[in-house]
Length: 239
Image (cartoon, rainbow, N blue to C red; front, top):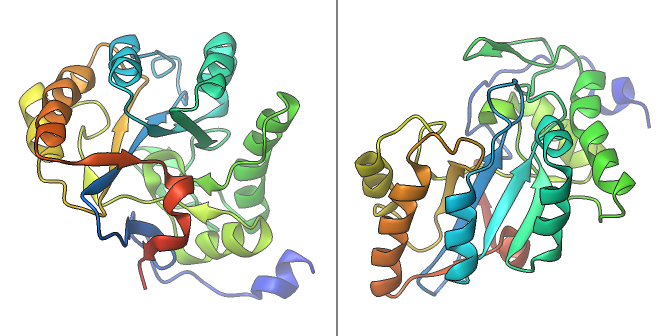
C-alpha cells in the first residue's frame, strides 16, 4: 500500500519529544532502568567516541542500548564492529542525517526536519541499510536526531517500517552539554521503569564522569540495567 493511501492527507497536530506513539517508560516489578546512549554524527563536531564511558560500562558489565547515526558509523567503522560483537550492547538506529522526523519540514535546535513522508522513510531506512550492509540484523528501534517528531511521522515508522520509536523519561546530559553534577543528579532521579537518554559521541563533555558516579550509587541502591530489546513487550507509550 502506498504512503498516500496509507496515511491520506493528514496534517500533524503534535510536535515534540513525547508525541503519541513514542515509548517513554516500561512496566516492571523490579528495580531496573534502561540506559540509552546516542552517537549522533550529524556534524563534523559530533563524531567522537567517549571511550571512558564505554570502557566503564564494559568493566562493570552494565548493558546499554546504543543509537548510532550513519555519520558516526562511517567515522567509526571498526568501533561499530567491536560494539556489535559485545553482548552488553544493543545497537539501534539513530537516523541517516540526524534530522528531526517531520512530514512538513519543521525545525528544532536549528536542524530542519524531514519534509515529507517519503523523507521520513529515507531518514530511517537508509541507516537500516548500513546495518544490513554490515550483515547486522535490522534494528528494532529508531530515535530521530534531536528526538523530535510529529505524530504522523511516528505512525509512518510504526506502520511502514515496523519499528518502535524509542523515547525517554529522563534526559540526563542535555546533549552532552550538562555538568558532571547535573548529569549525576538527573541520573539519580531515575525510578524503576525509566528510560534514560545520554550521549556517547562527545568525549570532551562530562557524560562519562557523571555516569560513573551516578551508576555506582544506583547499583548500591539495588538497581540493575536492561536492554530495550529485552523489555520491548513491556513498553509504555505516549497516548
